Length: 91
Length: 201
Length: 71
Image (tube, rainbow over all chains, first blue to last red; front, top):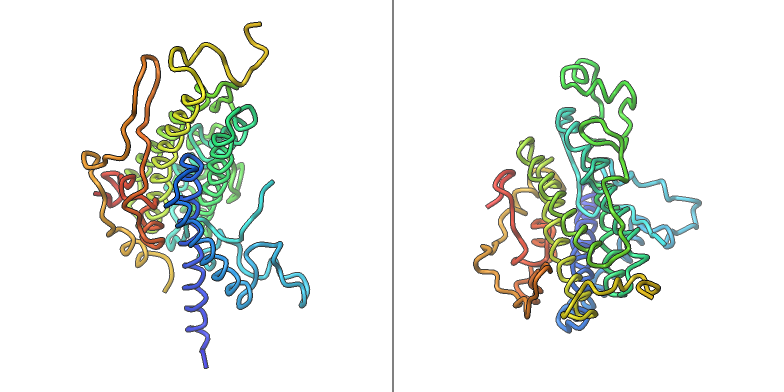
């Protein structure tokens, strides 16, 4: 049974992975903008796209949406529930 | 149109407020070579850019600069959170505080409010990309200077990241200029402005 | 514990390339009154975690400043 601190660590670790894979995709996006024929860049982008999709789906299910189109509305409007990204607690 | 994800592109977690650092870092929020100017420049230039790979790049880098604007805002916010009046007065932050309290306002470190005069959107692909390359170098120098002025690792960490982004963006704009060249005649790249098809007739 | 000093130290240890080693792409035929940036080729890719710490996915573009802990 996970205690509060280890749940927070798992949440932070998952959020961290999303930050990292998103940045890798940001870099690949710019590279592909100027190298649209690069098969290697495209392959890595596609691999990360699948990985990111899974990470974000897991995070959204366990801890809430980071993208408002994906918000779960079963228990009311929760967009403001998590701290805003400029607060230290969110980083 | 723009989506928003509730996260920063790079994390900011500053443990110790520092009004002196906030005073200089705010230049990358609303100063002449800051992220607001950068995003507005690229997102404005993209409309007249006739080559879709390049307008795609301008859209993507312009969007990334908005994310950087947010990071700088977060840094200034965390550096000034919880400041007391003696700290505000000792650091010289009082001249900002009197007009904005601890609100984040787009201005340069000198106090000059954000001005679109610092950016260009010339409607010519070669001029616009040359402007963009110069802009990335100016932003990089500003981050170099910030790194000389701060020593808290919590501040240095995101500032180093933002500085490195400028170098990557410079490389991409240089490559985009190559794409523009591929679409023009090397006999004379300046014979026509491809963004203005009614010229010279 | 996430964030702060620990992550900063961890992220600073990725290898960089000196500008003399970077050999991505020739500039091709050049003419007067034009600026040229060599085109990058796809190599020396960091892991996503190292990339975030370096500020780029590409070792060849990793060019830190002399202040703020750079090499």
